[in-house]
Every structure is written in C-alpha cells, then in structure tokens.
Amino acid sequence: MNINGTPTRTIRPLSDHGGVEIIDQTLLPHRLEFRTLRTLEDAAEAISVMRVRGAPLIGAAAAYGVALALAEEASESRLETACARLLATRPTAVNLRWALERMQTHLAPLPAAQRGEAAWNAAAVLCDEDVVLNQSIGRHGMELIKWKHEQSSRTVNVMTHCNAGWLATVDWGTALAPVYTAFDAGIPVHVWVSETRPRNQGAALTAWELAQHGVPHTLVADNAAGHLMLHGQVDLVIVGADRAASNGDVANKIGTYLKALAARDNGVPFYVAVPGPTIDWRLADGSGIPIEERAAHEVTHIQGQAEDGGVTSVRLAPAQSGAANPAFDVTPARLVTGVITERGICPATQEGLAQRYPEAGVCRTA
Image 1 (cartoon, rainbow, N blue to C red):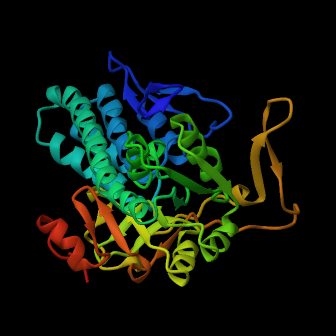
Image 2 (cartoon, rainbow, N blue to C red):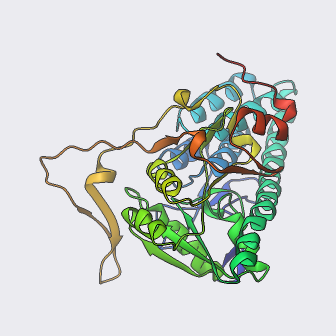
C-alpha cells in the first residue's frame, strides 16, 4: 500500500540477499523506520518483540528467517534448528507454523548446496502469494460494503479491531483489504478504529495506515463499540484472525469477542477475514487454540509521544499492582456472520469452510 504516496511492502529482501528489510512497527506511528534483519536471531527477535506482527506477516518473516539461517549454514540440522527457534517465538498465529512447515518440506530434500538460494526464492514466492490472497479477500469483502451502500446511498461505516491491515501482512491486509478496495473503487466508506488496548495497535497502526491511504476514519476507545452499534452508527464489523479452527471459531486480538457479542445484540453483521493459511485444520474448535500471555508492563504502562516530540513510556497503574495480559480471545463461530476468504464468503461452520477448501478435508484431530 502507500506511504507518502509510494507503494510499499512491509517486508522485502535486500537485492544481494544480505538481509531483509522490515518496517519496525514498535516505533509507529511516531517514527517510520526501516530495520534490516541479517541473522536468524534478528528475525526471531523481530517476531518476539512485535517489530513484525499480524499472522500473515509473522509467517513471511519466519520464512525469510529460514533463508537468513541457511545463508550462514545450509545443513539439514541448521534447517531444523532454525525452524524450531522461529516456531518458539509466538504461539497463537498459525501462519508461523504453516510457513515453517512449508519451507522445511520444500528445502529438506534438496542438496545442501542448493538450499540457500532455494530458501530465498521460496520465501519470496510465499510473500507474493500472500499479496494475491489478500487482494482476493479485498474483492470479495468489497461486495459487502458495496451492497450496504446501495441499500442506503450513504457512507458505509465499518468497525474493525486491532490491526488487520497491510501492516499485518505483506501488503493489502485481511480485514482492511475490503475497505481499501471499496475506497479505491469510489465507494464512500468510513472506518471506526478501536484503540485496541493494551498495545494500541488500532490507534498506532490501523489509524496510521488508513491516514497514509487517505481513508476516512475515526479513532474511538474500545469501550465505545457497543454504544456506536446501539445507536446505528456501525453498518458492519470486519476483523482479522490469528488462527481459525476448522469449525469457524476464530482467535483474534483480545476484545474481539466483546465486539462480536455487541454486534449480535444489535443486529450488526460481524465478519472475519481469513486467508487459507490462517485456518488450522488440525483443530476441531477454538478451545485448542493457544492463547499467548504477554508481559504485564504492556498493561501497566503505555507508550506515547511527549509534547517535545520524544517517545516515552509512562506507568498507568500503581507500582504495587500486577496485571494479566492475555493477547487474544476466541470468538465462537455462532457469533460470526460469515468468513471472508480468498475463495469467497462462507458460513463460519466446518461445512462452510470445507466447501471453500475441499482439499483440506475434515479436522484431523478429535
């Protein structure tokens, strides 16, 4: 998508394969800074501390992490060690495991002398495929926004949560891809951006990228969502997912479940944008999705820009108070109006998903 009018991807290899350039998302929206990852540990650290985040982008970064590792040593043991190291970085986003399994399956049979270059090529293909998947999600999801506009002839108000825009993917995004596609097609659309405590990815990332693209939007506190729905100011909700179970249960940033409940109570359609690699066919339902517990300081402290322009962190809670910080929650399929995939929109059921992905078969675990 665009940064200051320039098309930009969130991750890209250097031309000499000496490293991988990323946008350091921990610095947004106050500073736009590109960072170069040159080693396996650089890639693992970037995923762990969320310099890159969002399920599709985590998978892409892991794929390039494998390439960086094999640039140092292309042995089979190095491939296995690199995949294990990267897999341990974050537990919830299934794209991480998917990308590493894909890389390992492709690279392991090759002679060691061929693995290095093959890894760079495989990671690049994975990234290009991600862009195509998201563009397709955008086209299918745009039809929902278009239909809403045709019914009322007014601006369509879309609510989202966290950041499932292009910053969470290689390009275009998942939940925001329909918004960008509709906006570029001239359909009047406005986005309610919930701040998404505790890391404020809505305020810091979604608002920033929407502003870069020129999409009308308004930032609101997380707790304003129900109020806006009750008063008819939300036409539909579109969120992303870090993992979807085979029955349509979805894990997304903490607070998504509450938005789904408010949407159901107020008759607001609630859609989840899910590319194929984010569906975990090994899980029968969402109860098996691992929920990452992050550091307490993300809750007790907040980062922001001071009046002098410097970025600082300040404490919100008493020093004596501890904090729990589950990073995700699971929204039951019964609250999901539909799943927007790259293959079309389907019901949030095992049958609905299986119709879109017949090659996946049924869940492989009890």
